[in-house]
Amino acid sequence: MSVHFRKLALIGIGLIGSSIALAAKRQGLVEVISIATRRQETLDEARELGLGDIYTLDPAEAVRGADLVILCAPVGAYADLARAIGPALEPGAILSDVGSVKRHVHEVVGPLVPEGVHFIPGHPMAGTEHSGPSAGFAELFTGRWCMLTPEPDVDRAAVDRLVAFWKGLGSNVELMDAAHHDLVVAITSHVPHLIAYNIVGTADDLGNVTKSEVIKFSAGGFRDFTRIAASDPVMWRDVFLTNRDAVMEMLGRFLEDLSVLQRAVRVGDGPALEALFTRTRAIRRSIIDAGQDSSAPDFGRPHEAPPAVDTGFVREHGGGDDA
Ligand code: NAP
Image (tube, rainbow, N blue to C red; front, side, top):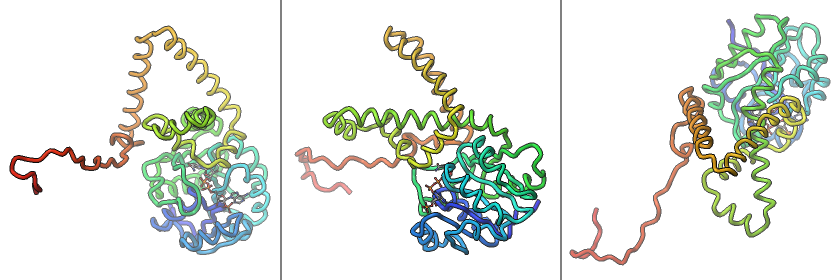
């Protein structure tokens, strides 16, 4: 199975696009990378970082002659992008994407894909809260999952090539139905982001005095929510606009369970609380065992020793240095 592509076109070069560019180059998976963005500043930044070989503001120009095209822009931009690149796509090329929702992508892009082009949507389950071309790094996909959601009638050899490409970038790959993908990510990613946006927003609404205390005392739980809630606003707006059904279903279940938990707190049902917290701790353990997170305490954050304290204590023999 040849993983080698002649020309990779990346439409959008933020965190995900730049990470693909760096990893694909490092692993020797592509000969030439062409990059298209919407704004000149982003294109200049990508050029300064040396992420590709061809730079353009015209997505159609970027995809001309490409045997692999990956949309790496926010999902809300896909319909316009698909219309722009459609006529320039080469027969036999693979058209893929990295969007966080999949049914919507099939619905809006699928009908615009010309005959002879293999359309294989994808979603690498990897990311950080940082955005833009300088946020990328070649190791982003290592050991992470990438879901591909081709329709059943898509050319098998093309799917195998794209699977091999993502494996070459370091990912584990799973093929999945788009609707099932959307439900899975609704609970594993989208609802958690909504909860984080909500809790940070609530704290922000609490007024100035409390707010400064929230920031000052933001240890543990709240601080971890703020990391998630710092994720790109446009990307996440599009996620909730385009995965509404799955998010509503999972949110409904979440709210039911939250009511049960609320009652357990109100009536002081210690055994119920402890039973749930024990079950959830085991889930954290299994994520670490599956290699999907670090087992280091506090997510491996560096911890500095506190500054030396002058206790005023003088040793019997002068209290000098002890080295
Ligand atoms: P990002 O860092 O914000 O970068 C977005 C890129 O898309 C920029 O290069 C931007 O260029 C370009 N873009 C925006 N609007 C465009 C338009 N209308 N036409 C052409 N290009 C446009 O975003 P990202 O985090 O890489 O996310 C990109 C995609 O990956 C999204 O679909 C997202 O759902 C998916 N994804 C993200 C993560 C994550 O954790 N971040 C994880 C998995 C999948 P300009 O600066 O020129 O506008």
